[in-house]
Amino acid sequence: MGAAIGLRKDFSAEALCALARRARDGPQARRLLTVAAIYDGATRSEAAKIGGVTLQIVRDWVLRFNADGADGLVDRKAPRQPSLLKDEHRAALARIVEDGPAPAIHGVVHWRIVDLCQWLFEEFSISVSETTMSRELRAMSYRELSARPRHHGQRDGAIDEFKKISPRAWKQSRGKRASTRAT
Image (cartoon, rainbow, N blue to C red; front, top):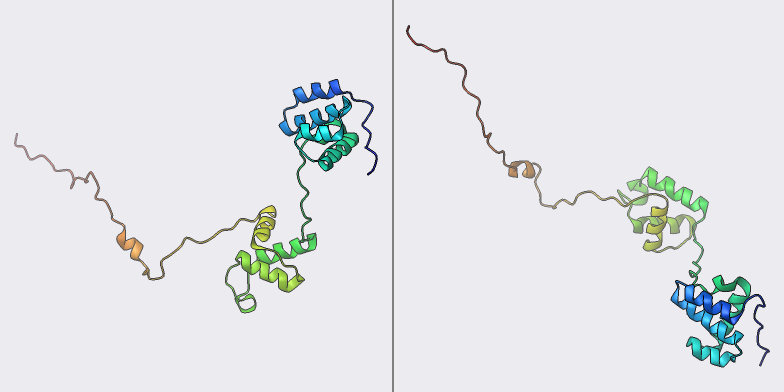
């Protein structure tokens, strides 16, 4: 079993308890109190019980605290996997979206996300999901647009025939009549 990792010398248990009281993040406050217990002389096992975690997690917290201070104990955003698409792939994708598909070549009359995924695989041998493709297109300021749906059996002019023309509320008079009064 290795030796315990030492704590920073520029903090004390009282300072960490004060930081924990002012902390707006609950998990950070719990971690600060766990490290403060170690400063007070508690064993790492006792500190793990205070924090409600395992010894390995206490060790990770101590390493983060030693490296970044109290800010190192704030929850971090998990790192994302780097994008499969490079700038040249995005440029080619933008070009093909702007130009639109050629039905004879691509076999489609308008691009769908699944068609663009297939095109990307055929051109660059990069396989991405539809969700990833949609996210990339949105990041490139493209939005998915679709035509208004139309029933397959709808006749031309059926909508115009259905629309009703309301009669005018006021009718124009037939014209001015001359008064025919005898004087």
